[in-house]
Image 1 (cartoon, rainbow, N blue to C red):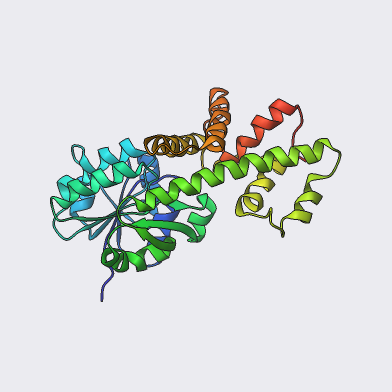
Image 2 (tube, one colour):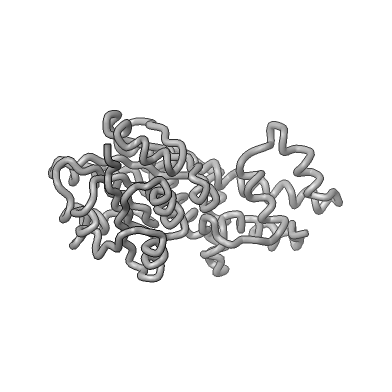
Length: 296
């Protein structure tokens, strides 16, 4: 049985390694990106060059998007020359971007008018896990469509079906709120330790196996120690995710004071021009305020 041909739209920090992993797994792949240099990179890896979202959709069985935000997804799917224009009955669309749940549901309704099924399948793990194919993948949609697409998603990470359309994006909002607050408290607490005169790296080794241990602690604290904030996940994109979290919480009249406070910290860093830093750059908020650095 031949593998379905994949259309991949959005060849960025996350999209490029994801597309490469599908190519390595011998999936035929046609790619499209608005930035020509990024598209050239994945074509060199063996992808077919797509000319537009519509043309990609017309040329494959499963269409995947990995785009920055809700408006980008709406434009790629519903806009002129978009996926809806080129797709046809029986195709499957998987959006792996992190966007607002209401937008996922709205896009799914439009696709359903042409009998095109959709999964919303945002990911967590950053560039490192995108490269290793070990992303956490939170999926919303029909169970039978999820089961059909599961072998494709398993090339990229560990997919878990959490509910109907929009449920994947809701799970991602929960994830991003936890990540944001976690990174913030890691920076806040370790600066306390350093200011008290204790080696932060020794504190890390002492506590990482206990209840305070977390993936954020393990992945992000070494970046803070090295002063390395090259983007695995850009701060401006985390601000976008937190905006979706807070907008959704307001619509549901659900109080999220910790998330709101971290959002204010992120906004202050964006105002300082730190848009392109990794979200571990939250440490800079505390370092600037306390006049001390975690960098060794």
